[in-house]
Each structure stands twice: as C-alpha cells, then as structure tokens.
Amino acid sequence: MTANTIPSAQVGNTSLQVTRLGMGTAPIGNLYSDLDDEEALETVRRSYENGIRFFDTAPLYGAGEAERRLGEALRGIPRDNVVIQTKIGRILRPDRSIYFDYSRDGVMKSIEASLERLGMDRVDIVLVHDPDFVNEEFHNQQALDEAFPALVDLREQGVIGAVGAGMNQWEMEWEFAKKIDVNCFLLAGRYTLLEQTSLNFLDWCTENDVSIFLGGVYNSGILATGPVSGAKYDYEDAPEEILAKAGRLQQITTGHGVPLHVAALHFAGAHPAIASLVIGSATSAEADDNRAIWDVEPPAAMWQELQDSGLIAASAPLPA
Image 1 (cartoon, rainbow, N blue to C red):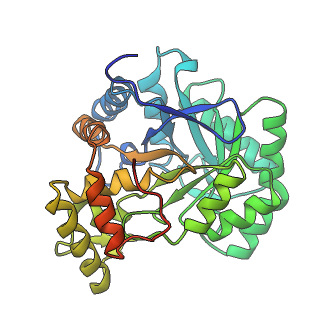
Image 2 (cartoon, helix red, strand yellow):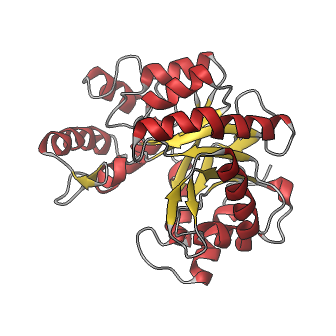
Image 3 (spheres, rainbow, N blue to C red):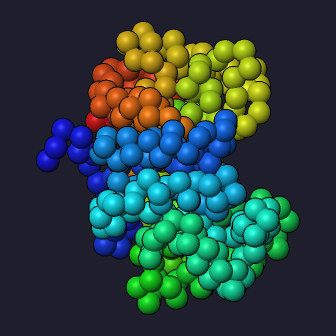
C-alpha cells in the first residue's frame, strides 16, 4: 500500500469496489466558475494521485464538459484502476441544451453519448438522475417502467456493473429500492452533521445490501463556511434556525480543535451504508484539501459531546 491509499468498500452485492472518498465532477463542469481545460484536467489527475479511484459524473454537469474533461484527464490510466459513475434521464441535445427522457431508448442513447464524451468503452455504474425534478409523477413512473428495467437488463448482460438513482431526497429512493433490484444510490444533502432525516432509510439500506454514495455533506455550503452571512443551505440562503444550529455545532467542534467542515465530512462517512463520500473539487488545491481532511482523526470525545447535546440523532453511528 502506498501513502496515498484510500480504503475501499464494496458496492452492494456487486464485485465493484469504490474508494471511500470519491470525486464529484460537477465543479469541473463549470458549476461554480468557468475553468480552463488544463485546470480541470489537473484537478482530476491530482485527485487520482491522492488515492481517489471513484469518479462521479453526469451529462448535466457543464452540458457534457465534466464527462469530456474526466475522460481526457484519465486517458493513459488503466481503465480497471478506476470506477466511473454517470447518469441518465437528464439528456444532452446536440445544441447542448438539456431535456428529460427516462425512456428505454433515452437510456441507450444517453449512455452511448456519455461513452463518446468520456472516450471509454464502458461505465461501471449508471444512475437514474433526478426523476423527481420536474413533473414528479410522470418522471417517477417512466423511470420505473422503462429506465430502471433497461439498466437492470444492461447489468444482467454485464455491460454495466451496478444500477441505482441519484437525487436530493431519500423518500423516492426508498420507494425505488422496494420495487427495483438496485445496488446503490447517490444521496445529496440528506445525511449530514446538520440533519439526519434519512437515518431510517440508511439503516434499511444496510440491512438490504444497498450502498449509498453520499454527496452534499456540507449542505450546499453552510457546513463548509460556518454560519456566516450569506451561508447557503439547500442551495439558498440559510434560514435563522439553520444558522443557529450550525453555530452550536461549530462551537463544539472547534472546542475540540476540529474545524466544522472536517467534522462534517467524517460524521457523514460513519454510517455503515455509506460506501463513499463524493466530494466535488474544482481545483487541485481543493483536491489536496479534501484528501487532507480525510486524513484527520477527530477525537471521540467530540462526537460524544455532539450526541449528548442533542445536536445529532441519538441513534446515528459515530465515527470510530
């Protein structure tokens, strides 16, 4: 093992192994600011150098730019060294506009286009992307009737390794899990140091061998910045009660010498259902920072104080 090795976890009952820390590629799709190609490519390469072997992407991110840049950055690296996850449902037109299509034909076209942008002959994991985003009932049903069966067929044929969904809510993911033979979910923002609303769902996933890739561990920013003016929560300005709770969390973590964002990342990864924390990086400096945070070991007394104070759920697993 090298100094940069990150432990891995199995994805559901598949043969896939993902590093417990993954890279989210939305930032290199110009999510927050326009990046030049070389900066974006260097971010991916630095993440790889830092031990990350799991990369999450989607056609939506930068209208295909994230997939293109990810594939270019990984060119020359043995394909079996990395696990690539992309998504279907939010489809990219030739003019780079996005539309929704959860049909079987849409699944096939989307995967083919993703492979072309990535410059790869396969992806390992394919997720149904945001079927609740617009016109919830329609997309939900089409995903169940067409998208998921198409992906399950591809998995059974050995074309892809795992099937799931990626969303900002756990309720619909749970409904999908009860109806479809899924392996994994990407869940953003619903299991964090600030809120554990999905705890029962995660417990169910543990019992039923469904892996969770956790995104949004900073709740759109407030757990990274702290309760400062303009802090974001769920993509909007944080309300007063959220600012107040973040302030109480920060007071305890910093009292133990641990920055709030470091505590947030480590708490999120402690539940046994979590196979990987998918953290976005826009620059090589951010990639280095994510790895440095991963290597910190917060004291057990801090977790116990947070739980004893009632700031985190009494049944939430604490980091070892």
